[in-house]
Image 1 (cartoon, helix red, strand yellow):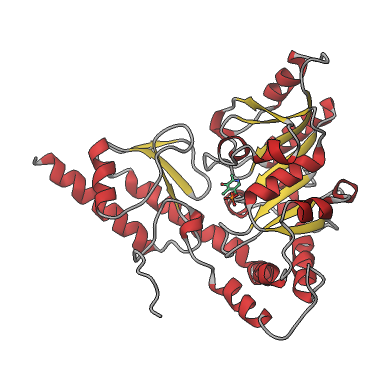
Image 2: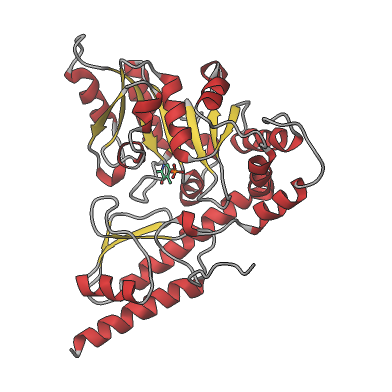
Length: 354
Ligand SMILES: *Cc1c(COP(=O)(O)O)cnc(C)c1O
């Protein structure tokens, strides 16, 4: 059978439009031999867990699930009771893009939305939210969730994570990090993973694999082992325990071994920087936000948006706080960036003479 037709070249809609990176693919192929134990009792899963612990330089408890919605929802559910509240940014993926799954899996825990520049929470916002109400009629704040890199393609610096964690300690809150693009944050900040996680006070990290180059897979990393108690049951009950686990975890070994995760993220961030630089020279385009990671936000004239889409380019215009989002991935090439910039320049040129 022939492969179905796909649009050639890269699309900027999301980093999950890219395929599987070669290293993860090769690892899957290597793992596709013989029979091994199921449900995670296999050497690939053991190796993947060990590599995650190596990456964070600590003895974390690691679980592998299918996607980010599940990893966030189950991790958050494990940190609170149904009468608690989870504080998160108003643009947080857990609020805007998970169809209520965090509330569903936690049996109704309420998300309380906080504002914050650049997609980030600040200690003052957390203080205000906790101190606003302390009575029995209000859901009791129990968890703070931050996204690293943020939905607006910025990254919390080490001291910013520490400050959030300090606010959590003041109020007896636990700290969850949505790291669907954690690798891109590490690449942007140039710090060891432990500096922006457990050393800074993060309890649980949802570590993204899919957008970083896997076909399927996110990891839930508990830095405090006692918080992981019975988490395996949550995974099983919610349909997130893969029976043929090596089909997920072998890919992880390919991504983590030799630091491919960081190379992939650096490449994605570099392409975004290149795209951002190029868009500065496209007449009528206004760059938005303070990009550090792999997405560029920009306001485009309406006919430029339409023109690019007519030429087959795909990107979103409903994410974040306005404008269009151009997301780069491990698979974005310099040629892809040049191609979209060339089209944008041509369209704006034609526009001048109309
Ligand atoms: C993509 C993404 C996720 C995971 O989404 P799934 O589609 O459920 O895998 C989680 N958080 C953020 C910030 C994301 O961008």
